[in-house]
Length: 289
Image 1: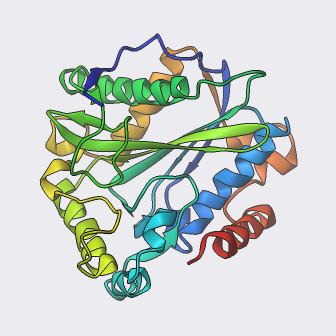
Image 2: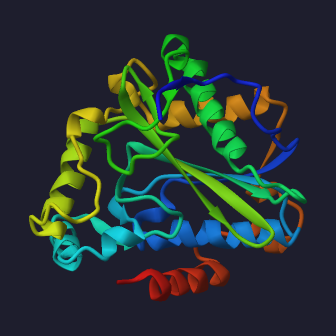
Image 3: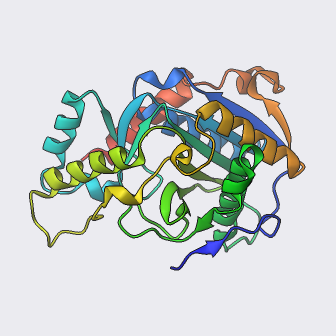
């Protein structure tokens, strides 16, 4: 797929009311907990117990694998090597391939109820892509207008809705569907070295594939990856996150922090909630190699 401009305002409508969940320091332990939180949040939104939501979070250091990555012949050895280097590892359930997670990467998820008869989920990819471009433009207008969508060959976790500036990817988008709701998730590389992160994922695949070039896995070229700060955009997680909140509000969304939601069950939904920890155990058993 070739590059295409991000055109704000033509994507599917954003809900007027959004609950805002933010986790910046809580994700230091089990890497599956943030994904389990979103699984639980999605279930609650689908049941009507919570309104449509946005989740912003970061993890201090790890690599989240796709299911196919975990099936490579030497994946366990490659994951063990990452763990020895201080990177936590986990197999994620939202599709895609291996991605690094660290404090310079902001994870963004929109958790939305399914509309009756809705079939074209590409609109929601476009919605999140345009919001991210607008978030960049809040603090760095010249970078925001240069954001383009389209698969970046040689990047890790490549897809049709890669976001890039000058041909270098800083963001990838995936989706996870449940019965009554779904979430669209993006990782946004904000600060640090994109090329170093690309090298980390390339080394994972080199070991995991054991040199077998016939296997199906991304051929990562580290130079195709860059952080927003390297591309003339925001260079801290705080600045990008503030820009994203502003982009939502400019679209007419009213944001309510989780602590102000009505109902004790909603306010209590956090990384230590028994529902979340149970979901993490379920993901571990279902998606482990």
